[in-house]
Image (cartoon, rainbow, N blue to C red; front, side):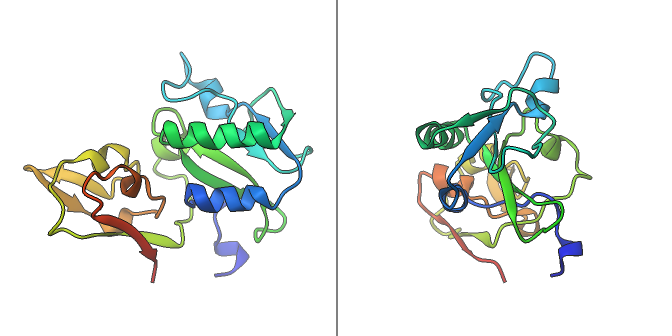
Length: 184
């Protein structure tokens, strides 16, 4: 895939996002532009969640940029996991092979989930569900912001082409019948 084919944002798991951030020495955070623009604010999380790795770049058009410590970075990742936020790293505009920061997105206010025309690259993994172990409880559908998992007449339906490989479904499955596998 050439740089021209890459979207500005891509999806990865929390663990992969932590590895990306862990390779950096300094961190800044600013308010998420989507969360700032939403009347009444975001119902899922606080707004200061746009992480950048260089102090001179703009992440999402939000305000309130400040440098943070590793302890504060760890708190952002804890909140992202607790609030079921999707890690969407963003690339350097001049060199799309480099990552300049990470957005922590949700289905309440983030433009990506509300605007189906906004492009985002899938992660390197995809879901694999052991349907014979699935009880069709539907819990995974509540956190699949990509609409890859839906309940239909009490049965789980999966549209793998919609799976971005983030893994929230794996985290919440009470039957442990889900895993992420390498995307072909």
